[in-house]
Image 1 (tube, rainbow, N blue to C red):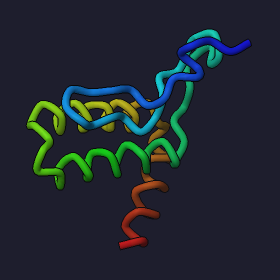
Image 2: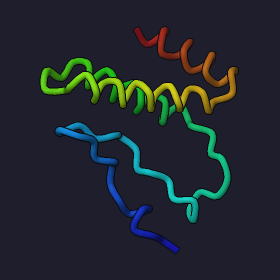
Image 3: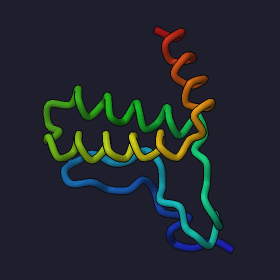
Image 4: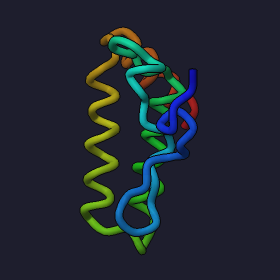
Length: 91
């Protein structure tokens, strides 16, 4: 069963910025969901893009940074350490 929330695109923020992931509907994703490395990548990339965007406001950047921090907080410590090591290796 799909709901409008499931079919909705990325969340719209003030200005032109959007979150790169759709809101999760409790009807589709019951219980807590552990973010994947793809979720972490999307959040990190969105924050970096907002920082680089001259049209982004400080509030936009703070909102995305807080969303990114919330995803990292929801991850088990070993996943975060593994993800950060992979990101460092890519640089």
